[in-house]
Image (cartoon, rainbow, N blue to C red; front, side):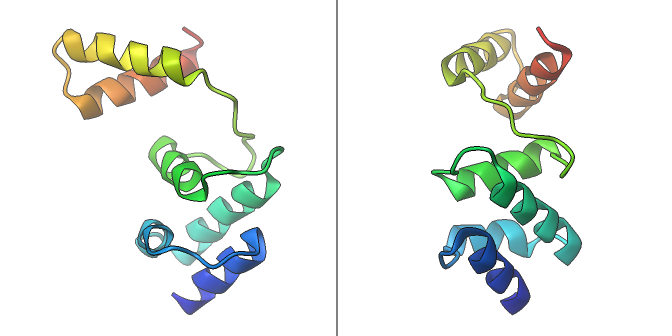
Length: 104
């Protein structure tokens, strides 16, 4: 974990929080480094590193992908529609991600 902490410090110039340690601690060292590389290469300064990393893990981002700006209001509304159709919150979240990736 010390190596991941040090890599996080290099990527962000700050110390990792406990939440970040938990997020990265369950991953392989290589995957944690990939995520930190994406965090570091983000075109805009990442205001919420924990949220960025959580989303990157959930959506399976790869270093070759650049993060895209998302309309969170539209995203949340789409998820609520799926939930009203009977999906669980996790299923609705996954359906929302898939529909965004398909371009709908």
